[in-house]
Every structure is written in C-alpha cells, then in structure tokens.
Length: 197
Length: 197
DNA sequence: CTCCGACCAGACAGACCTGTCTGTGATGAA
DNA sequence: TTCATCACAGACAGGTCTGTCTGGTCGGAG
Image 1 (tube, protein in one colour):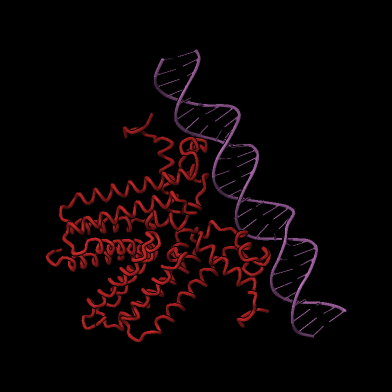
Image 2 (cartoon, each protein chain N blue to C red):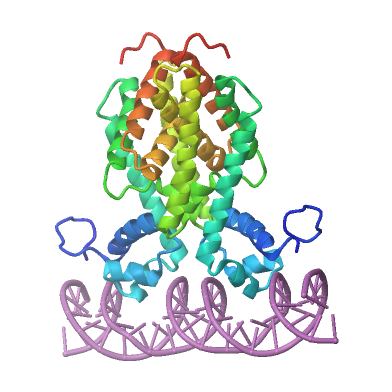
C-alpha cells in the first residue's frame, strides 16, 4: 500500500486520478474533459476510476473539494507568516499574484466550475463554501486591523480579489493583482488612518 | 419576408434561433446546450439552423457577437443620459445593478463563455473585444473627469465592475453592485478632490 | 399556373461519452 | 502456497451529440 509515507515512487490510482482531474478539469473545463482522457492522463484503468469514485460526478466533487482544501491550507500558511492584520490582508493578494503569474493560470477554479457545468447543487455548495471562507478571513482580519466597518471593507476586498483574478486571466494582465493590492492598501488606510503600510 | 419592419407577427428562423440561443446558452452554458434543444426552443427545423449558420460554432459566434453589440448599445444609451463624466461612470455601475437584479442573472456572458467552452479563438476574441470596450470607456471618462492617472483609475474601476458582477451572481448578493458603486464614487473623489458627487 | 425560396419534419450516420463487465497480473499476508 | 486486494486492459451497451439528407408545405412573383 502506498498511502501516506511519501517515499513511494508510484502514487495510488486514486491519487493519480485526482491529480489528472485537477490538471485537465481546470485547464479544459469540466464538461469538455471525458473519462477516457482522464484515465489515459492518469495511467489508470477505467474500472479503477469507477472503483474509487463511482461516477464522474463524484470525481468532480472530489476534485473541487481537494481544490478548496488546498487553497484554504495555502492561505492559512501564508497568513501565519505575518502577525499584523494589515500585512496579512495584503499577503492574500500576494498569494493570488503568485498563482496568477504561473503559466497555466485560468482564474478561480470555482468560478470556472460554476460557469462551465450543469451546475449541480454539489458544485454550487463547494463554490460558495470556498467563497465564504475568503470573505470570513477578510472580515476577521479587517476587524483585527481596527477598520471602522469591517464587514463592508471585507466585501470591498472580495470585489477586488475576484476582479483581479478575472482580469489576470482574461486580459492576461500581470499587473491586475498589483493594481488590486495597491487599492486594497489604500482602502485599509482610509478605514483606519492610524495604520502604516 | 419578415425582416426589419417590426409589425410582423412571426420572426424569421434566424432571429428565433438567435433569441433561443441567447436564452439557453446564457442560462445553461454553451457546452451543455445541444442543437436539438435550441431548435425545439426556437420552433425551427434543424435544416434551417444549418442553412442559416452552417455550424454550432458559428451560431455561438453570432450569439456572442449579438450580445456584445447589445451591451455596447445599452451602455452608450445610458451614458448619453448624463453630461458629467463622474455621473456617467457611476451610471455604468447602475446599469450593471439593473442587469444583476433581474431574475435570470448569471454574470457576464463572456466570462461564462470563456470558462465554459473549449475556448476557441473566436470566443476569446469576442470576449476581449467586449472587455476592451469597457476599459476604454472607463479610461475616457476618467480622463474627462480630470483624474490624476486615468489609465490606472480605469483599471481599478474594471476590477470593481468584474468583482461586482461575479459576487452578484455567485453570492446572490444584491448589494454587491451597490458596494462597488460606492467604492467607485469614493475613488473618483480621491483622484480628483474637486469633484462633488 | 408554375416556379422558387424559405421553412418544416424527422430519419440517419458517425463520433463520442458514461458506465458495466470480464478477465488478467502483481503483491503481500496468513 | 494460497488467497485477498489492488490495479490493469479493453470490449461492450446505451445514450447523446453534431451534421447531412430526403421530402413535404406554403406563399408570393413572374
């Protein structure tokens, strides 16, 4: 069994399938990628896919779930590097900037999934859970930063975050995230003039 | 022939097809909607569709083209109501707010198409043309409003515009556009303190 | 009347997609 | 050794999709 202890040279079928789904679904869209392409890319038999996941729909769900968890972990890890709420807020934009400047960037996976799919309830729930996480983080951090109206400021930051993600992808504009970050910094000062950034 | 003179009771096959495509593609996604569903919804024979458009791909292109033209016209019409650049900028957000509060709102059709489709070059070009139009409009208006750095301010406004559209759709948040509009007004004042809004 | 263009109805081919099923190997534990 | 487990390979059924084709209807122009 090659489960957790990392040194195994070959991943389990389930892990390879999730990795393949992660690449293909994100890059080409959930609907356009068929089972056959996934199993070929993963080097896995079709029967193994159905043993592990039962259906394509469940594979999609697992893909989004994994994506959501990974993003939460990445954000939490990043936040832990700073002890100042204003820096923490800006670090979320920095993290977005790093993602967006990677070669295969296609915008937020959940936005893509929502637009692309038949949009079953499962996709929507994974999507809104992930969006709520970001909004909550921003709200907590804004409150900690002493903002006058943390809920409102957090909503504004989410607007910038989403907008930057869209623009970075569709306009191929590497500066979009920097623009958003700069504006976010400006807004933080406006909401709490005692801050120094 | 029932072409332009409006009073004809029955639209041409081409017009009915475009109308049906407009509803179904926008609502359910380009990939998930099949030819059969479109012709049924339009009340048109399959042969007529292929006579008019030649392929589904060309129908998609025409759908996006029509969407793009309609949006341009709507925005230009709205801008003509005001003679003050600051009001004009805000009126674009008002227009977005009206669209977003309509029952079947699903966000920007071009964002949807980009995420959803196999993303042929045609879709991308229709999408970026539409995005360039908005950015140019904002840039011109910011310049006319006497903003210190009109290009930068316009990019920031586009971030807010996209973010509001996303949030209004995915979060079902009717206030998202209002939040964006308020922030836009704030930024206008920051960029040109002599403005009164 | 006749002809033509626009449209309708629906069968059909060929490709592709999901999901099932049969059968085969490799590996490690009892 | 024996046996359970995991994974592989690939055929197959049933459905859906795009696109083509045949044939029929109707209204208006020559």
